[in-house]
Length: 399
Image (cartoon, rainbow, N blue to C red):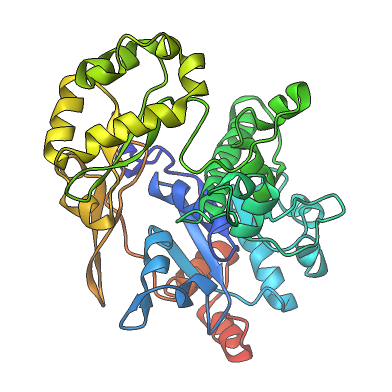
C-alpha cells in the first residue's frame, strides 16, 4: 500500500506518449497528485515543448512547468522494437495518454484495438483536435483552431473588428482538465464497479464547445446568435472594465438587484430610477449605466475605489498583470505560487498543485526531468531488459 503522503493517486501508473500541452498536461495533473507518470519521448529531441517559449540556459520554462513530477524515457515508437518495448511497459500500466492524429498509432500497431489485447485493464486517453471519428478526424488541430471551431473565438472581442484570441492556451488546458477527469472516471469504473479498461475519445473542439454555456440552447429555441460585444455580457448590468484616475483597471459586474442596491449606496446617481429597478431593465440600458459607473470610478484613485467597493461587499478585482500576481499577499498566503529547485537553472516559480486535499496533501513538486533521465531504470523495471539489451537499443537509436 502506498503511503498517503505521496498524494491521493499514489499507486496509479501513467504512460504519457503525447507531445505539447493538451494530452501531456492531463498526465501532469495526475502526476501532481501522486500518480507515477512515465513520459515517452523521441530520442535526441524529446517533446516539442522542450523547444518552445522563453528559455534559460537552453531550458524551456514552459517544459519545466508542464514536465514536472514526471519521469523521462526515450523510445522511438516508429521502430518495431520501440513498439514492442512500449507494449511490455503497458502490461504494468494503468493509463496511456496520447494525442497523435487519429490513425497514426494504428500504423505503428499501437491503436486501442492492439493495446487492449496487451492489457485489458488499460485506460487509454486519446486527445485530438476533432475526435477519433467524423469527417474532420484526421485534420490537424491545436488550441486556437479549437477555439475557432468550438464557438468561443467568434464571440470574443469587439463587433467592429476581427475576433480576438485569449491570452493563454485555454482550449489545451481545459481539454487537459477534461482528460484527467475522464481518466479518473474510467479508473473508478474499472476498479470499483468491476469494469474493464476503455478508450476515452476527447477532442479539443468539443471541450471548447462544452464551455459555451447556453449558446446552442438560446440559438435553437430563440434564434439568438452570440455576437461580439466587447466587455458587455447579458448577465452583468452594469459590467465593464473601468479605469481609475491613476490608470488602473477594475472589473466590476453586478448581476442581481441586491448587489445593485449596494452599488447605489456608493454611487447615489444610480438610485431611484425606475428604469434601473430590475436586472432585465438594467440590461436594456447597460451602456448608460456603465457610463455613470465609469465616470465615478474615473474620478477616484484605485485605493479609494477598492476601499468603497470592499465596504459595500461588491465583487470586483483589479485586472492583474503577472507583476501584480507575484506581489499579491493573498497569492502568498495560500501558496498559490510554488517554488521548484531545478538542478541546472535554480529556483523556478510556477503554479502550485491544485486542488488541495485535507487528508492527502501533495508532495513537493519535482523538477521536470532531463531527456531520457529514467530510461535505463524504467526499461529494466517494466520491460525486463538487461543493461546489455538497453545498450543495443541505444546503439540502434531506439532509445
